[in-house]
Length: 337
Image (cartoon, rainbow, N blue to C red; front, side, top):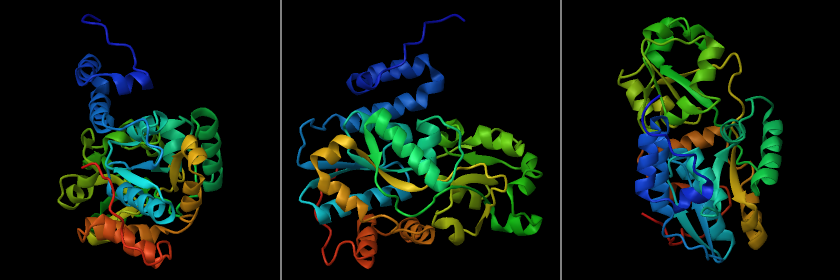
């Protein structure tokens, strides 16, 4: 094919040294990677002010959706409550790959991840195994390959949820994805960008269930999918099982009857160097083990998405209820707005 040759893939070191102009050139030369390149540009901007010398400061990050934001805030408040360290919050980063590159480069110390996501999107392994097997495999591979580790899981399993409107589920008597596949040719699908690209996402799901939709799936921001489904802009969406708006908007989660999706246990991912420097962080995060059930996570998500409450206050109240913070008030933090 003619035209200019595409630039070579960028290393992690280059990612954090490259200019915004270089990233835009990369996006133009490789259109398939345009979204990633633009996301990287955002990340470079966010991390540009990070000092490499922050021995008394822990950087907590999150992905760009409500549940990750909540779990990131929970991690931050837990560290603040049980250590003397300052916490810098860097929330709403673009997604899995951005957070992973950030922690590898030492710009992030800890962020909430999901074991199934780590297994498939980062380690590129088949989506299979029990919750315990997936956790152990991810932990071992992360430690040996990346020098990062997992602390004990929060307790919730936030698997992908293929959602349709409750009225459609009742009218068509649908309970499973296999049953829904018959109606898919008349439906419009809406998915997040990451779900379209990752190995445990759309392509594998479509192959497992023989899904064919009326048109190519619409790629939408994760925060817009549930409302778009309710408003009949789309007919099926890939959400999260702990989405707080599922009952509120009368959505129905189709059963994954062919067990396509692996376990997605939420876990803190932490740099090994951070734990060596501050072992008290491991002790603080260990107290979060098993503290959040699926139902509790759905309630927390609803408090933020449905009731539009402040995340810090929602997390503080939950932590007090669980006996994690004693009687402390939220400590002022060094957030980046």
